[in-house]
Amino acid sequence: MGRAGRVGMVGVLWFVAMSVGAPASGQVNLVGDWTPRYHQDYPDRIPGPELGDYTGLPLTDGARLTADSWDAARLSLREHQCKVHIAPYTYHGPMMFRVSEVRDPNTQQLVAIKNYINTYEQERTIWMDGREHPPAWAPHTWMGFSTGRWQGNILTVYTTHLKQEWIRRNGVSNSDQSTTIEHFIRHGNILTHFIQWTDPVYLTEPYYRSEDFVLAERPGGSWTWPCEYVEEVDRPSTDVPHFLPGKSAFQGNFAWRFDVPVVAARGGAETTYPEYVTKLRSLPKPAKPVPGEPLPPMVPQQPQTRPAPAWESSGDIRTFHVQGNVFLLVGAGANIAVQTGDEGVLVVDTGLPQHAEKVLAAIRKLSDKPIRYIINTQFGPEHVGGNDLIGKAGRTTEGGATTIIANEHVLSRMSASVDGKPSPYPTTAWPTSAFFTEEKDLFFNGEPIVLYHVKNGHTDSDTLVFFRGSNVVLSGDDFTTTAYPVIDLARGGGVQGVLDGLNRLLDIAVPAHLEEGGTYIVPGHGRVCDEADVLEYRDMMTIVRDRIVDMVSRGMTLQQVQAAMPSLDYDAHYGASDGPWTTPMFVEAIYKSVSKPAATAAARP
Image 1 (cartoon, rainbow, N blue to C red):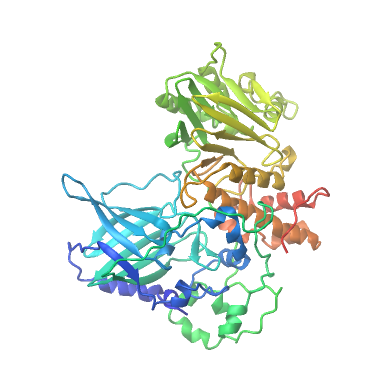
Image 2: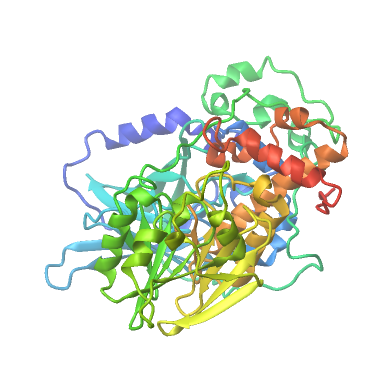
């Protein structure tokens, strides 16, 4: 068990001891070039950890399944090639970093501390001026958003808004819900970096780790990353390399090679504490691994439910500038986009009807120009509920009510009777411009707007809306960051259609430097994203689909598939045990989708 795995409570006590007696004010100078001392956990940090080595990590069963399924060939996918390390991991890898300060030119007050990290040309900003962290719906980045303060001579940093990447570089993933607390402590020419890493999705308790750096007397060396993806393997772009459960050729090898008891190699909070050494002596020696035999979990865990964000349907309408001409409105039940310009206002989705007046008021704060267009990405009430009021508040150039654009299936479903009763939507809320083609476009406020119909995704009526000039895409409910996609089989939905929509988003999106930013994607529910976020969601959907396809091919019933928990590694992030769309319902929808005679999805062996 390496130093990183042994830190645990020992590290906490060490930090407390270092803090005791620290002066109330004693900020030290961190400016300079720092190079790592690799005597700590060298095999883990440089050549990389062994596959299956989860020692010293307080992992959930879902985290283990994610790591067991990981295939390094996934890094050859073009969207994965230019991904970089997140802030909490990058200090543990091969890197040097330069510390500099940003000060107010008039007062000389410290505004920020900068870390330039030569691995991948990353620059991290630690804000020291007391500013607040961004709202929950803001984009996440590799470096996250960091604020710092001095505690005596210790710089303490709090970071949120991190992307998904590594906890350990052998498939052990963090989630985008991770937060960290770091301490930078200087003693002479030695700088110690200590981190507390919290992740409600993949860690059962905080993970602690430390690294040392030495001040470089002769700064030099560079590891730049002018990354441009290439096609490394001739395969479909929709393929996601991964191992089905129990099928990894490497499973069990670490425990066997290093004579580590299997349950200890699998990690878990218990293994991070010093007293676990005593238990190790009583554990059985590992047997030679047999491919295909599943490895044991540490502690049986039940599916978890993460409630929808409180802000999503609160009725407290907040505005966020995405980029270009496009703004996001949150709080009305689903995400709403507003495009403004000299020609007027265009609105994508209108929220729940009870919030329509507040939505209209928020739109009027952005622009007093006429509302010319409404585009609906689907027919759900949280997407079309405000059509009537907001549509009546606008007008076309000819003087009529706002033009409402949607796929023809939205019109047919909104105008249909329900249980023999008339449609619950007034005719003034129905689409007035319904299209049936795969694409539709218009030019408004100085930019092209392209609508892409997603066939048989969440439903049969879904539309992606691409603002080409602003470089923003609205995905509707084929992509969300808060739940598994609702696959409405009764209304034409299907798992392959959802995947087609996600892959279309990846085709549209062009990331900026280091697979970050560039094209922004606004999901039907959740935070603003970029290509890297859609990529993780697409990979998740493909992996779960492939597992269920494999189970169906082995003749497993729906009840057996649900009991096998094929989405366990993602349930803590997207799953639900109650409510309108539960994890068993999600699994059932995929099972029925791939069990159809026409299903063509094939699992990777």
